[in-house]
Length: 173
Image (cartoon, rainbow, N blue to C red; front, side, top):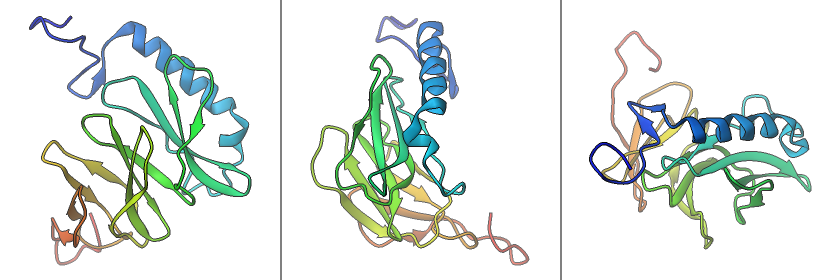
């Protein structure tokens, strides 16, 4: 219970504060580093890019299995991960604020998938993405190419629009 009498507080100002969960995360990250699926990722730019859910309970990462890179999901209290179907070619996963969905990039597109299963939804074009983030207003911000403005799109999909404009002399942010 946090200071306000609500649910347990895992993060404060973007820092993991719960020592019990921190120990579990540290153990999971060590296990992730030793995982042969993760070691099989051949694209160092893509990498496993592990991301911990905002509620501090789940870890998602990209790994190769059966010749394809997919997203894998595991709970902090679980020893094994499960593949998220339909995520072939996935890289650079990131979480929705409620920890129920994962955004990621695959086949030149920004996509999302529900952690409980279901079809992958394509949200927009992202030809050479660097990163993405999902805010409380259900807007996803992402860098679709190595240079140019950061884009924004509804988490429900739509046409991505510039959210920023780099300075005239800059090629990106």
